[in-house]
Image (cartoon, rainbow over all chains, first blue to last red; front, top):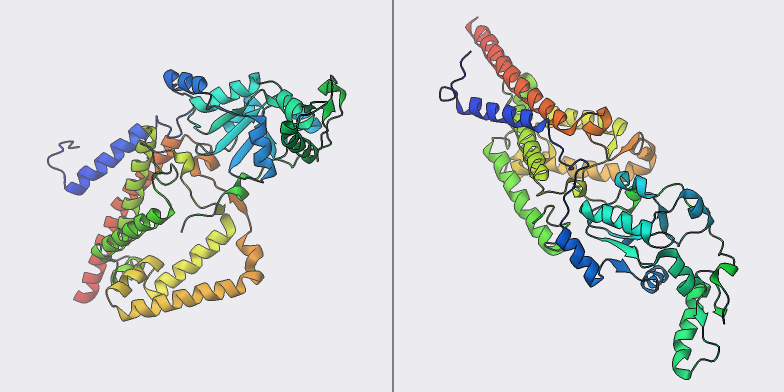
Length: 211
Length: 202
């Protein structure tokens, strides 16, 4: 068999090129496999500038205004999720995050009880190129403290009145109640939540595209 | 810089329409240059005398596949953001058969009929009118056939996912399939030419 390249027709050369590229392709994975590269400086800068988090007030505001341009991911286990979750949340434990259908250009808000698991999930996603991943600052603890059961001053000054009314409305919206004085947040019953939907429907969220 | 450029917000909705227009013009131009504005050329493949359509289409598939594969492997394309049609197995088989029948009878597929209209071919104009009428009939009949249209949904799946193969292996298999197809189609063309010559000689 002749291997000489010069003797082959243009079509023959192109066919050989395609075959070569096809052979090399066997080893590759266009989705990047499990390996990731991390831009440490970029991550540090993000942490420093605190652009990596969303506050509970911001999130509450998004939910009340029915914004739909973000995904809210609860990284706790399924049992905790059944007891209570922030409205609109999808339950994805950290171990399942890699296979979960999220798009790299989506705004993704992660939360856990405190902030540790959410931070781990955040790192995992950022390292894999999910530029829109953010942490809910201080997680569900903060959500309970500030949104569900906010501590309101006993004798508000006139300046505080507007903020106080707002806090009361937000708390009521999410089924909580403001506490007065030194009551512990844990003493209050968590609001009832509907049984979570059986898995999200990312396909339904997608805008129809294509020809 | 990462692609898809639109998804990463490099340009907005309006500019994306201009880009689509440019790509569409280029697509039509190259279809015409490949001779696909002629119903004779297109139907010749069903009589096995000229398999140019098969060869051009498979060449395009292999070129695009290798390009996208290597660009995303190198990190220039985020493949998870590239949209592709979800699979509805049964309705797509039925639709493929209907399209094939229309192709044999009318001499065009939808894209090439538009190319034929652009060069002023009468049969192309008739075909395009039929195409638009067909869209209208489909829309009106949709309530009656909705259960068929939405049957056997498999979601957005790729061949590597369905067969559980390595992505790169599927790339190689498609390349081999194309090269085998090119080789086989040349054989068929030569065989048909010989047969025709024998018929003429008789």
